[in-house]
Length: 294
Image (cartoon, rainbow, N blue to C red; front, side, top):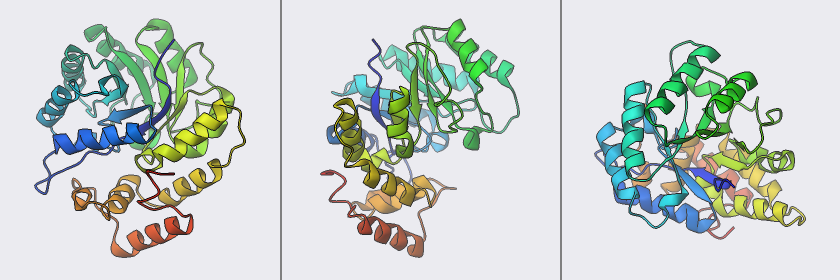
């Protein structure tokens, strides 16, 4: 039985004032999300600014991550367009016994299913002990996974291609592969996804909705009445009005100024938008104090 299921946060990367990666704080933040209710955390997903962080910093964090108490709860993103850099980083990660990955196809270039199958085939041939969750997010990479493409990858690599994070939402309602993990990319899809047989969610806003999302998940498993899903969805809708990375860093910066550090070309919300975000969340009785006690 696959143990990767439930509530996963696409964790934020914590930066120093000089915009270098703060290894200790990034790991501390990820561990706090698990303590608050996440079953696991994605390191170096898009929310973690993976595409903007240097290779050396990623390798440094992986070395530290491999010695932590929750090392089995992490999915590792790569955040590279480069096939070679992807493979090399995965080899390092696997050597540290971090073998579960979330991998998006390269951005910028135009390609189709055949090229995507070749891309993942080359990765798996080079790193056969990896376990990969496909990352379907057309808005970011320009490519949308088709059902036949996913089916072909699973057929070709049943031990390595184990699931998909669906942030484009063209798969989670229609994909039907036995023992295949499906994670919609939003709290708005958590309950409906679970009802369809999905495995949970992987989302950016679980950086602040970990405990609330976990309650919805547990109430579903226990067949209890849903008393938290409405608030969870309202919180997500509020963040969805803004760039999620900017919104999360702006929101969290009221608690700790280190969250003001963000890599260009990303930026914090301007003063007006930040105040509107916080005001709208307060109307939902959702603030920095309630994120950990929801």
